[in-house]
Length: 419
Image (tube, rainbow, N blue to C red; front, side, top):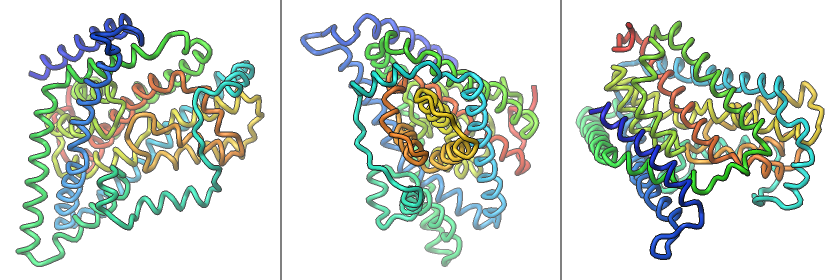
């Protein structure tokens, strides 16, 4: 069944590429632009996925945390999880920094940047803020004043913090109410997973709509001026995903990397087509549990957290993009300024929304922190959407690798451990 679905998805992506190239932005059907029809199909599928994300995340974290709290394993697992998240994000950012420094894709692009400023592709109208304000905003998102408002707006950082506290204290109250609460959240989680399975039946159709719109709206001419930047990001992502993560899997998790990649196929395809780590979460949970053999105790805690706190591919991209813009300005970066950019790339990845193109705001924030105009982000917008698809795949792959490695440290033997 899984192989059959993967085949359908590959067929859908092939047809989407052909349809998008044929339609462009001009072709119409009954006076309706085909690109709008593609967008509607893709958005309906994306909405259906994101519909289950908030209750799924809350139910998953609450049940997982409650179980660990009752087993007195919350502290140990939490330390392992956060340590691995921080380590993988730092590793990803350092790989991005190494290649953007080595290849220097921004050198020689100063004239292109000036033209972009004369006729900017977009105006973000973001006010310059000091470092303390940015850090304080992260803490305010972490501890919101209204959890219902946070949930309705899909702000995952506050929701995750609340869910961790709620789940942790469920076993601490009287047994009767505790059992009722835990039963409710377990039931909600199971219902959300059933809804996810239903939505996944439409995966090929959703992939077709999303991918066809990207092909129809993104022309090759827009990529040529910054092709070197595009290539630098892809090389960095590939080194991290195909060398660094497999080494971590092999030596920390005792897992065959090739078998792991195959097992995560549906989640990676969903990440590529939706450009959303959050929308890919339900499929990631299913793949890690059913295809990698990791227990729900581990996945219900690590994967929802990873969707917000372990966006390693995005952190890598933010670092490369910021250095590229600085190079395009012809700015000689001091060691201290490079350190600031690297540190901010790491920090801004924690709590970033797992939605398409959320990194744009992070790049502008880092540019302001480094004393550079945020308008420089206009230079990368032509390829932002395409690169978003690739780095989201790396985000999801990194999250699943972390879950498997943590499972190994907890003494779980899973199906990918041999072969």
